[in-house]
Length: 241
Ligand SMILES: [Zn+2]
Figure 1 (cartoon, rainbow, N blue to C red):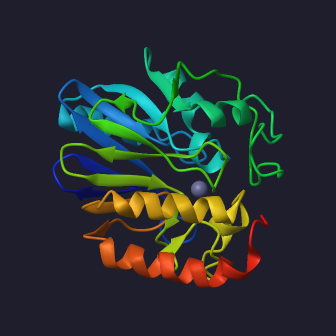
Figure 2 (figure 1 turned 120 degrees about the horizontal axis):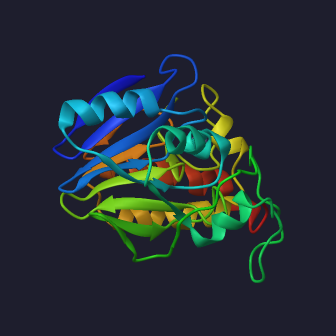
């Protein structure tokens, strides 16, 4: 995988950077490493090598959402490394268990995209405001019903999962970028995704790290532009998925 460093606490690991980039992240903590997302297959060999180089053990996996290109590598990491806590948003845990139906109070659409039923159960279910090491859990539904983002409280770096993409040009989840349309096609509910994108922007992140595409430093203006585009594209649609 391609490895890049961003600030003091973040490494981006990218599978297939040229063709179909899928990112996961290592967050450096005093007690070890947190892996955010896993791509579609196990990143364990790269994680183990980096763990050795850094002298930090992998402690936990935190997942932004239940799509296969984010959770697919969990089993492989668990087989290689013992004692890893796996967490995901409480709502997306239902998708992992095979239940794609809308919950009471949600827009009446089933979740979209590749949603594998997995042979493991998360150890911890995350809610808005929880902490995973230095990361603050931020509810950001829309791409999936229970998508969460993670903001590093040390430097305001935001790991946004698929609430935004940066491959093919920055976009809010649900806005089709012709050079990389896949996250948009897998988006559950665009008006909800746009509200979440605005909430994430309001956090004033110092850095934007997405599930697909390069990390952006000082992303405020770019996020504003992406939100404006999403309003233009979704504006006429009211509450349709
Ligand atoms: Zn994705």
